[in-house]
Image (cartoon, rainbow, N blue to C red; front, top):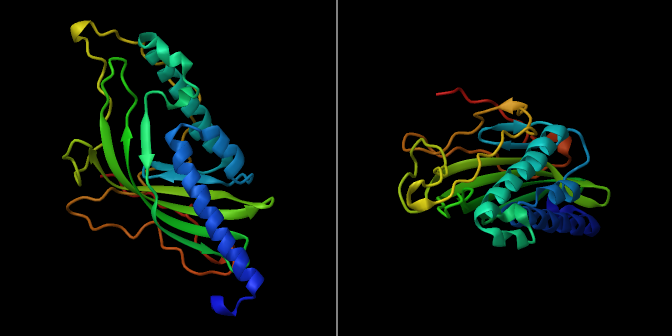
Length: 260
């Protein structure tokens, strides 16, 4: 059935769904940049047990794993960073949101493609997200920043009167040092150097091992960065018109790539 043949009320509902899903995705990049993960989990994720979040390095395959890693583990890490920074810069104790201390993450959403199911109960979205991320600042103030370009593939469902995430998949395409170089080379994202021991800089205590994070349900790699010897991957798949979620693919459908 073409869109023009649908009843007006159904067309309006689907158009509204596309706007709401685009808004949720935009809210994600703002909150993620500020470390506001708990509120996102509570307000904009489905209450189903089979929610998933995936990255090139693997997939969290259920509600518990997502909660442990995306919420609790991140809170432990950011609070540890906050305490270490505060030991050298006491003024940060006045920060209204300690979760944003020591990290800067900025993802710009572009090229949204959103398809709302004909039954109006689910939607699929594909987004491109170029951006920058600065690793946790060391206590001597030195920060390394990397640029990256990723794709987001998202499944949304209409639940309890509002649109929420069911699956979110992040596919990092390319990254490099923000000061140039490194693009298209097989490499890790820049890691923060240890605090400089020269010039009397103070060294914060080493952060404890994270006791909260849980093993990912599907360990990666499940996506491979672009390189000079590889064409860009058609992944995640493009959303296409569909009637109901059960008849189409899910962005949680992933396969593990062979290790190189």
